[in-house]
Image 1 (cartoon, rainbow over the protein chains, first blue to last red):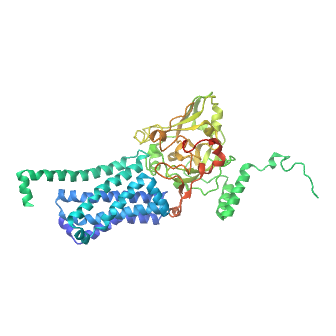
Image 2 (image 1 turned 60 degrees about the vertical axis):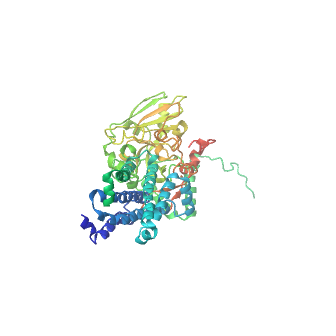
Image 3 (image 1 turned 180 degrees about the vertical axis):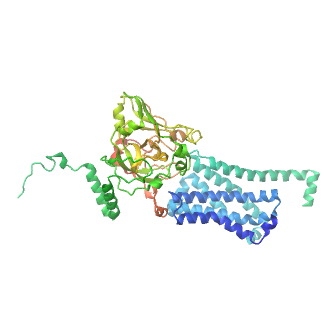
Length: 214
Length: 332
């Protein structure tokens, strides 16, 4: 598995796979195949895909550790950029189809509707992460600071979920948001569990040895 | 020379010479359209409608023709929503929360035999079989705008008759101030009945004067055919000046009561959905603006701008007086 992921073709293949939802939406829009309300369909689907990519990118590290496939790490930043790509699509569809690209209306809407404000905040917070997703940015910031900055994704995932819950709140229709919340809870919970274990381990002699061998 | 006329133009020897209100209103509407430069399309629609004397159905279900309605406001000249869209993009939570769910799931609904029970504060309560209800008054075609609270709209040719016809037959008592509509909640045929989304059965209500208004339609069909299951077969309400969820589907009980009845969405989220729920561009939903709407239509609508929502969904001339003096921000 590790060897397969280290293959030169692995990255382009995953890149193309991550573009499939976009291709499918674009094709549907061009052929008028997105149902009775194509605008709503585009806005909602691009939002769904943002949340899915957030889940995927948060799953990379737990998967890497659990399955002992370090090569997975190579794809993390690219998958994160796809989350940003789909959130841009989400924001653009909303701004264009729902608001007619009227910046005054959009800012008014963001200010008056809390669930839009929450979604927009998540987008704003994700922007510096996307902007520092290349090697030189890591060098310039230093690994520690870069990691600190990129831990914002935990907050962003929470805001994204809140945005989704709030949107569905009026109809008490929480089936889907609960599924996403459960996935994200497991992925973040794994990190908490891991951090606690690491913090506890150095106390004992075994831990000390583990530290030394590192 | 000035010739003095005795009748001053107001006395007509024959009532048949008086232009009916719907006719002159229709002509004025057409003149407005002419001024707007869209007469070509409107005329084609008009001519087509006149020639067919009713909208041609898609030929999927039993025909249910209706005569052109003379009720003022009952014949908007706007382009009809395609049958395909009107019958596949539905909110009918008993069959699923996604708007594509009802068309997939509603085939299980059994619309025969069907009875509607009229009860409460009426002199003549009773059970009406659907066949009797269909014949209770002449079926009319009404072309109404439909504005959903979610911000989209359609134009649908419904078939039915004014609910007032039924109400007059059952003779409400003096203390009957409201009408409550109870809809079917059958967990065997409706997969989402029992989910926590709403308090089942779905109920709705109208004030007596709203229920008696000629535009309030007891509806049995659309597009010249009986209602498809997902649109609320076999009998539903259509109240064109209110948000769509006020128009209860698949009705099994009509109850006359003294106090304002609870309604499904009001019970679920009182701060978002009021009892009246009149279409009102000036009163926003807590989570979105109601100033504009997206007309469901062909592919070009993806790039079409949203249109302005009209007060009482454009039926202000007909129903505005029902709410004279009411604070519509408070009674949303």
